[in-house]
Structures are given as C-alpha cells and as structure tokens.
Image (cartoon, rainbow, N blue to C red; front, side, top):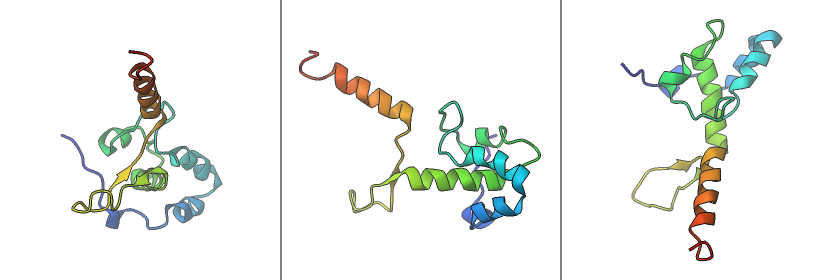
Length: 111
C-alpha cells in the first residue's frame, strides 16, 4: 500500500533549525536531503523516499528538508492559469536534458 506524505502540520516548521539541534554528526547526514532529487537524480515520491532514509534519522525531518528544497527550486506558475490554485514547476536536470534533446531533434533544420 502506498503511504502518503505527512501533512504540513506534522513537519518541522523550520527544518534547518531542527537539523542544527540534532548535532553536527547528524547535520552532515541530513545535508544529503537538501536537494530536490536524490544522489542519482531521481525525483522520489514519499513512499519510496521513506525507505531510503537511514533508521538513525527522522523521516519527517528529512522529508521537510527535501520539500523545502523542491519548493525553493520550483518556478511558480501562479497566475498563468487563473482558475487553478498556486502551482509550481520543478524542472530537474533529466527533464531539462530531455527537453533539449527533443528541441534539437524536432527543429526545422533536423526535419
């Protein structure tokens, strides 16, 4: 069964402060989660992410760091589609490479 992410109310409001309070040793481990993707460039959903966090760390804190990184890296689409609520778009490097490849192979010069 797929596990949904915890609601925002269950996540630390200031995850960086929580990491600092965890001590230097754990801070260095938590630093791995201050990125929108994992070390292999994968955009993991919570259900997969939670299994990759070491047992010695708090999953909710690592997830809060990841969510913060995703939110700060995403581009806002607010106002582009007025009938929808605030939307964000995160173009990870794999998606950017694919878009570039499609663009290069579908231009009029390539046809």
